[in-house]
Length: 495
View 1 (cartoon, helix red, strand yellow):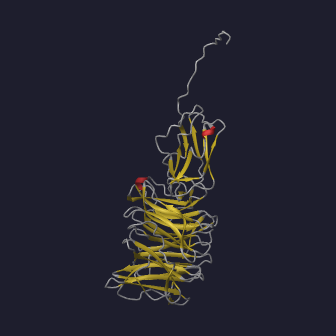
View 2: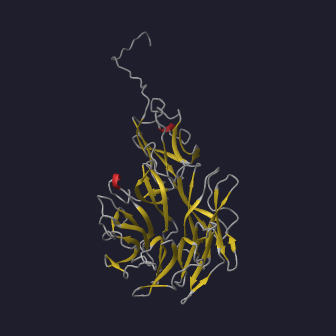
View 3: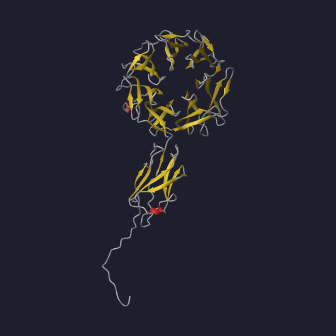
């Protein structure tokens, strides 16, 4: 300018060519048990350019479909949070993707992570770790029974035992943060003891009842009942033996209601003979109701189901198989002095039975579909015939040859029938569990899917309903596919 030259002190210019990269993520990639309310946050190695942080540059996806989410940048520009309205979807793969338009202050695009940032929000989350906590090499949890107490907390009873753990019936309650034992282990611990068929009931929510079968050193099998009172287990009468002397017990059932009614039933056998006996608590002792139950003297008894109606009267169902291998099923109700037939005999054992809120009998059976797979059908007895409940099958979520089974029928606290179903996603694969509720016209899903754990193979599940009408599930799982080693887990809905 005007022939004049201006000279400044030498300065070094640094051109930022280092791209920002992810240094921290929540949830972690590959996580399989994420809450639907889990915050979604990312921390970068340097600050981002605020103007590039948009819904177009940061996408939240569910099975590849975009979920509405607003990205929010921290004041220092290095942390990003995705704000989602409501809960994340369950039983899908949730992922976050960054576009090349997301940059740092110098315009460098964010480095794409080497591992896809994706995770799963399952339909159910475990309540703590395994309820049964013996060393895995000795774990043998079985015969699980599940209920919910008056405080809406789950309670479980199960049989466990090994050379390192006391053999018997364990009862534990979830206290909101962990599983706590309720009193001592029930049953015998000596070598050669037989403990089986633990059944838990919480009819009034405050005084749980547990029944189980027991035999020690070859003694006859007997049924034992305990009630939780004042912080300890108290015997409800003396042990009950089947009517047949020295009989074995093929099936055992126990029911109780909030009015104090308690009943148990045996499918008992000895010397090629078999029969059913039903016992009722009369306030001071267990008394058999009407003697042995059997219609065809030379047929074999198989299958047993026991229910209490709204008046506290027992309803019993059993099957008898003849020489031609055809099975007839009989249903009878105790009238106070004798047994009344409730419905014409059925052909073939039902998969499950229950009484609804109006004391109508409900049964479910199986039918082959066009894929050659088993579907579940439900029927209600209207007093003269069995009427199908709904025009569609119960469950049957997956295409192809995937058999659907029913593990339990229950009545929720609102009086609605609910079914616990099992079905593999792929033919011959491990089964997952899910729940459906009858709404008066159709079976509708309740909650999501309880899929197999990566390190376990499901064996069977049990269902309880909380005060909100939500399902709580307990599941016995074989450890690493070894059916001689099993754990017990309890799950709640991920909502």
